[in-house]
Amino acid sequence: MKDDFVFDPCMLSDAATVAATRGRIMAVDFGDVRTGLAFSDPGRTLATGAGFIKPGGIAKAAEAVAAAAAERGAAAIVVGLPRNMDGTDGARADRCREFAGRVAVLSGLPVMMTDERLTTVAASRFLNATDVRGRERRKVIDSLSAEIILQDTLEKLAGIGSS
Image (cartoon, rainbow, N blue to C red; front, side, top):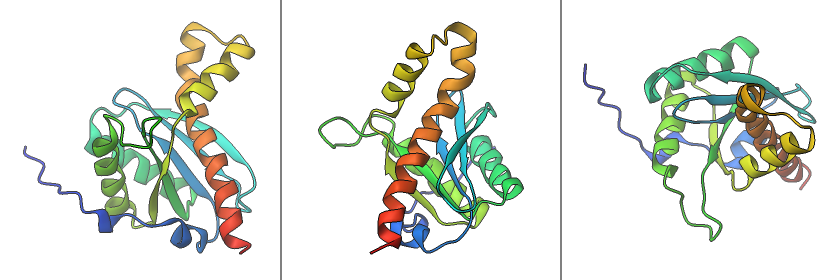
């Protein structure tokens, strides 16, 4: 069956729109194999990893994320955008934008993208420092990356809300 989804940048929201919502925010570290999830508390002070999903394919991943957002009562969703160190889009940026667009359409929630540079590096450093290795590491790195994306976003949104 052919999928005729076409991404439009208008499907995505900006930080001010997400900041204006109230309640939990969900963060997503989209990957081809595993997609990490994290949720904030309702007051938006703390990000907590919520595991990962392995649905298989961009459309199924978007459906699973939209369902998880509904189950956990998310008011908005943040998706990591892979950027290079020089600020240009990374190789997976277009695929992540398409994924975010699909999530926005399926969930009906504001979905914004945020720079995820160095989140996997930060997650790896933390796991190295805590001596998490092998299979256990694979089980937590994507969720930890989503948690880092979300905590960074919560801090940025708090600045928007206080201005």
